[in-house]
Amino acid sequence: MTRAGPKGTYAAPAIEKAFEILEMLADHRDGALVSEMAAHLNRSVGELFRVVIVMEQLGYLQKSAKSDRYTAAYKLLDLAYRATPTQNLLGAALPEMRRLAIETGQSCHFVVPNGGEGLVIAREENPGTRGFSLRLGAAIDMLKSCSGQVILAFSKPERADRTIAEAEAIQGVSADRDELSQRLDTIRRDGFDHRKSPITHGVTDISYPVFGFDRDIVGALTIPFLALIDGSQKVDFETAQGLLRAAAGNISATLGYMPAKPDSTPSR
Figure 1 (cartoon, one colour):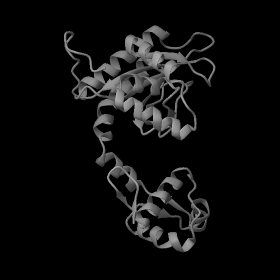
Figure 2 (cartoon, rainbow, N blue to C red):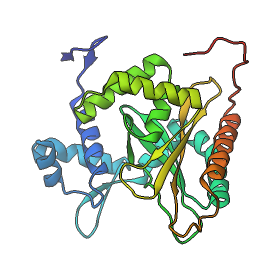
Figure 3 (cartoon, rainbow, N blue to C red):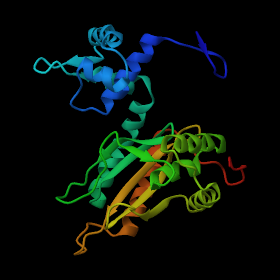
């Protein structure tokens, strides 16, 4: 059976069920029984049982001996790292992120585009006793967040437009395109973004783009700068911003990025 699509796609029910199960388990850290999977996915136990067993046999699911609940296995993480550019990216980013956290006394995280959302693929907590950080794997609002808008600002126009449309579909909202365009123009002009956190008092997000060898943006390196009431943070905001700019530049250089010559035509 074919479905409507740009080139005509095909149904593969077992594969669809397998990915539905994985996506569901991503939001259920304690795992789920087959019956719970069926209820959540609006399918029968019979539809899912054989798929679950095969996924377990292949090492993509693991079953608790105590509760019979299934969770996603680490084989998925290993496969994701080996099958995507993530491993090379983390190899370039993590040493710089560790150095950045030590030098600034602030946490930092790395966000990559993931459809209509951003995804935190790495984080480094500050070495002190106080700090603020995002969890690994957190989804980021591409339309409103500092990291998301940096990624949009330095993406190629067609890619940015596609990401915005996907974000609107996920969130069920329509972005103010004129306002967003003006904001992205400002970020491109400045080369980075910073703004007060919309949800946490005392935190100012600072974000710089990281580019690959093809001069396309690969992600955003961000510090949620936490200002302490007594002013005892290790460095001030301006110093942290400079160190973040240098770290993002070093990661880009390690990935093979070479800035365009001043007389070359800009890509946007």
